[in-house]
Length: 418
Image 1: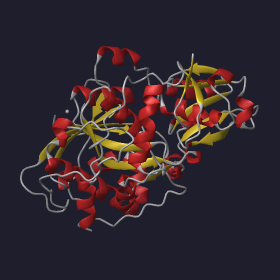
Image 2: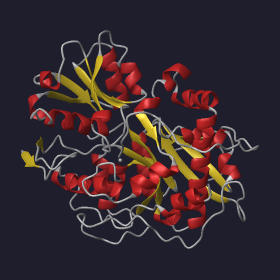
Image 3: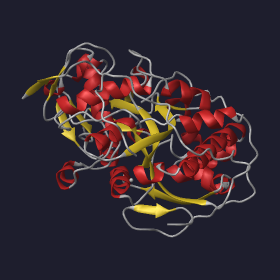
Image 4: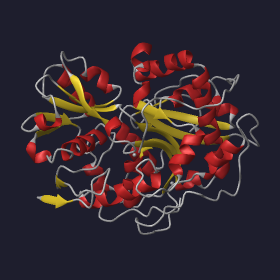
């Protein structure tokens, strides 16, 4: 069955996609259909850029450094110590409120107020989220007045489920996964804009494919329903092809990369760092990437309603994040070593991924929070584009209430202390 989408993701041009194949993008490692049926809530990404410039302020590293901790349940490993927002329904075509109104402003990271605030934070394999490992190791959470239990999830989908279930207070996830969760009944709020994918989501092909038109009749693997499945559909639409014109194989991201590197499939859609493995296949190349679709894949730190109800904790989290980004900018080699170790790749390989993920400074984040119609680098605008796609693809029964989804106030406060 074929479904008419209201518009192309990046424009207002109608496109046609397969009803069964148009499951929306999620940077995950397994299908989420069974979870959808079991829970009334669930889970939900944006970006732009050409180079990986990071406008940051310099910051000295705090004296306190955290250490790795023991493994924990739910597919996560605990990196250190310690241990669900009201969205007013509003038509998705209407402006999206990003101002927020926290009652309390936490102090800058250098002078935290009161007792430490406890937060459990989940994250998984993505260059825009590995700075969290730096924040933990260099003590930025502690210096910001936070007691953080940082959980690393090998399975991204498990982190999404953990946020819905309240097993983590904050999770690193894409905009589309967040909107999907809200459309399913979850109460979540975007408090940090981490990055935009600007090349680290890729469609990689063997020597037999020289152009997107050449994909017709080819076997292409990607994890069904994840972000690179969606990226594939967008690429096909540019030459008026659909999933019906290719032989699509739904394969988990890590397995797809390994299989393609071993000679299976004509093309594969994967995200970094799995792109490195896929490109080990002789004569393989990137056919197109997220760089060609600016603003479509943004990443965030998203809080539960309960966590978001503590504005001081949220402010301290935002402070810690941007202090970490500033430190990374001033200490690139040491930071790259920390992040490469967490990613399981060499430092040289990790540095090669930098241009494919644009880490946002406070100024860039505030720009992204602004509501600009017809600009895909505006989060509210991208959210309005994602919303009807979820419905037209059959993934969501109704559009998510977007009013109050984005909380820019903490980033504004932090920027005002610089």
